[in-house]
Amino acid sequence: MTDQTTGAGARTADGPRTGRASKPPRRRRGLRITLGVLLVLLLAGGGTAYWMYQDLDSNIKGVDIDKALGEDRPEKLPTAGQNLLVLGSDSRAGAENKELGGGGGVSGARSDTALVVHIPEGRTEAVAVSIPRDTLVARPECVKSDGSTAASAERVMFNSVYTQVGPACVVKTVEKMSGVRIDHYLEIDFAGFKDLVDAMGGVTVEVEEPIKDDASGLDLTAGTHKLNGTESLAYVRTRHGVGDGSDLGRIGLQQQFLLALLTEIKSQDLLGSPATTYRIASSATKSLTTDEGLASLTSLSEFARSMNGVDPSSMETVMLPVAYDKQDPNRVVAAEPQAGDLWKAIRADGTIPESAKKSPATGG
Image (cartoon, rainbow, N blue to C red; front, side, top):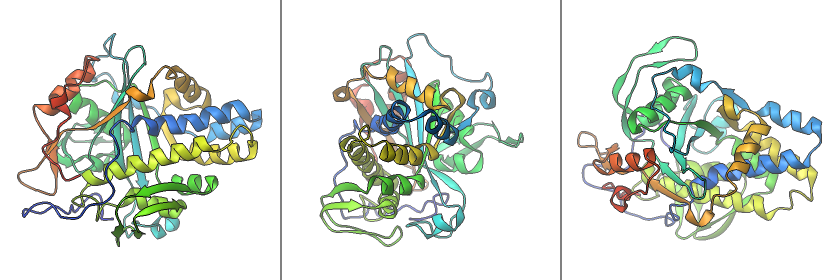
């Protein structure tokens, strides 16, 4: 995979690349990223001894988002439901990560996947909006973790905000571009998936057409494959040979893997095997960073229980409507009026118009 700050996309001025990979899954799967992780935590919290609970609880890292953002935020409306920003971060720091598929010479961590999960008032249905990492956005002025200030900037890649300024600035950027108040933040370290997948004995995926990506090291024939941890990382990192080689095609591939991960978790007898439960829950919690409001096993479990009324059949994931940037065809920008209509519906806790789900950029 290419350096995500430079993010060389595969689409050129001559048009998208040809070639297809596995079909993107139905767009209702994004919320299950969150539910899958919380399911593991809920099972762990109910089935382990107190010392295990304490150990798992100490794994979770917390970020004080509210303190970092201050008062300059969208108003929290009485009927706005709950909004959760879920980031999949891809760390390349350390010798082990550099050896994994797609690591290359890239250092630090980047936000590989971003979902704004909206749970309406009453919590019987949900929608998750995927924000392509190559989207050009206006980054607001933000306070860094060391207390210094990062000036506002125009036309920056969305995934660079995490790398250059940090998670609180990603929340602020999303709030500025959408007008949606983010209630909670949950970050999942993709590198942590290696240990999680290996702890479960692998994850099975269905590949409809061959995928070969020299950058990520992924080489899969069509058919059923059981991936180990290292192979799973290559799968979620790959972008070449999927759709037009841009992030638009990879979004569906990542959702497919995460659904397969949840399916594997549900298929294992976790409650019947405390040792397996603890091993999997330990790997999962080590991969988590949340806002302070969710930074404990108890808080995460309570939040998971509060979503028990959400009907999986009503869950939906849509991609933020984007168009190819006129100055740089390897980048995308929010398409209007579709994007504005999408965010307006979420702010009002209303129904998203079908027209707001259609993206002019079709490279995925």
